[in-house]
Image (cartoon, rainbow, N blue to C red; front, side, top):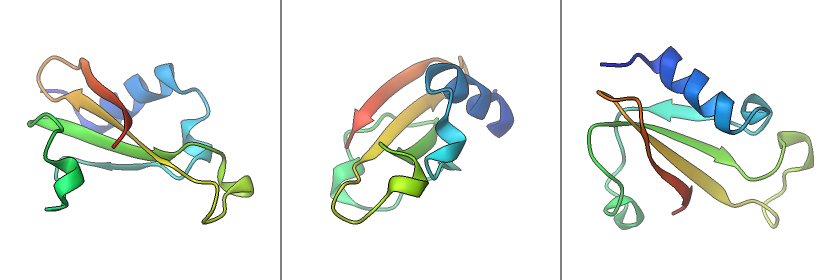
Length: 80
């Protein structure tokens, strides 16, 4: 089982400036219907598509990355 720190490092290898984009990491999802398609047993990492210093309500999309907790593989990486 990979740790939250390991999941963050995997994400940072894919998106090098991810810490500038308002990152959130959790192993739980809300009951939002948009999330029903995401795989289970993952670290769920969300971030904005642009750096926080340029962020506004009109220009942001939320990107999700799901990293398998056992294998450390990226199972999903896209907008939800």
